[in-house]
Image (cartoon, rainbow over all chains, first blue to last red; front, side, top):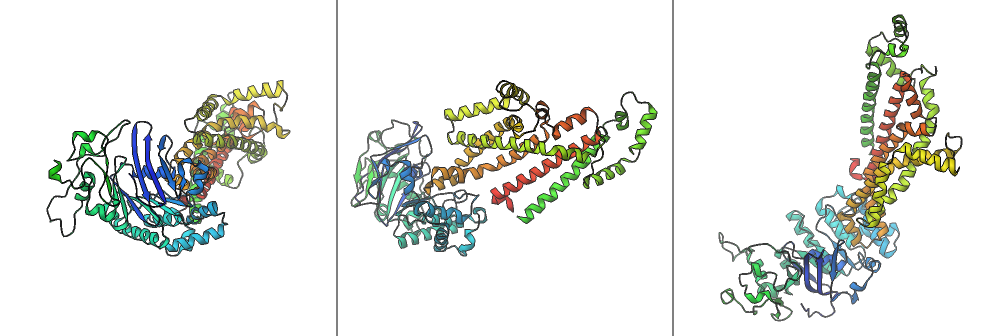
Length: 331
Length: 304
């Protein structure tokens, strides 16, 4: 999928990830994240969002292989980098936070120790400077009594606090890009809202590029300027959030949006939409649209290569249907 | 942390008491003590005299309280065989046994930990399989056999090391290696499996996402979390080396506690047997306590 963004911070072209040669987890995924914008990757569990993010970071588990036309960060080709070069970038210019705040911090070390080692590694800071920076960031992510928290261990903190610590830790070196992989999924609803608000505030204040992975379209609407809808290892639709939500074009995007009740529109008692079936496992050599088995508008030609269509502006999608298709005409 | 230590000490004291009761019961309830002291050719009159002289005709509770009271003061009775205080016998032999045990454990840790870490980091590779094969061999090899082979090879053929006694520090090398060999497989396996679990944990992914070096990830973030079962088993292994080195001490003719225990069992020297059992139990209790405290230092969640 081409992104018509000028000079993106992160640009991924035709990323493919294969798990042990049996499953194609990501199939030619492309993505561009602009400086200072929030870009949401949205899709069901198992559609390849997290694994795409881990591919960018080169943090894939052993046995999982990534290939791509390019993965560029600020013009540098990440594919050509050695592990040593890549490790200098991680935690410095590119940071990442994860879904599981309960297990993402090392239980054996204090918050202060885990935060300061980032600055010690990338800025050759001494412990005291690093601790000062850590305290400053803990205050910034809304943690009271940061001095005390620095000396505490992860098990003494709640899930919401731990995720705040993860965020603060990711910001230690003033990154250009923050990748957040479902950062609120494991948290209570009220805490989810707080963490999202915090991420939004930090993104705006620090001018971060934020790549936010979520399965929640509500989060997309609230946080993102751009959205990429992923399905079965492909970006099936991408564009400015306003455009995609106003005129969802891929059948999968439409299906997803139909699943959400809209205040003032959806009548009480009216059934919500659903998408029957599950995300399929894609074997090697699979061709055509990954969604066709669950698609109401599927046709025989969906088993062949699907064109990338332009829906106006930066809005594009991956389907045989024209942008102005309606359910009746497609059937 | 203070509360944690106090609680552990209290538990340790309870276990000590239990051990006192059990070691007393084992010697006094396993047949007629006076008859076995008197020997097979003794007459009924001899046995009666012995019963009276040793106070074996008094109620068991009284005998126990008296013995336990003395034991608490460090008086473990007198050996029938050596006609000397038992505590002195043990004290004389303790340095040899302690030196041997610590030598064995040090060698075991120096070899077992790095190899276990290496196997975990290279899980599934030829290196990993090779190391596990060595562990299997080590586990299957009897200590006395290895000891004898080393005596023949290093002691008699090459004459690099003394074959018996501890007149010089070199005397500890061969028995230390043999003892270490029995501990290495378990240490290595536990280190390996602990490291494999730790390396798969989410916090390791976080550490990698922070850009930390591989060395730091393995030695700081993974090893500390993998170390706890290793610490526990190392304490048990050291206990085993201090108490169970009977065979090794006899193969290398080392005048240690294990040798004393073996001798006193054979010759029915019951105050010594009783004292050695008590002594070994206390050693295990102390070592377990130390291991718990080390684990509490390693993992803050245990300190509550």
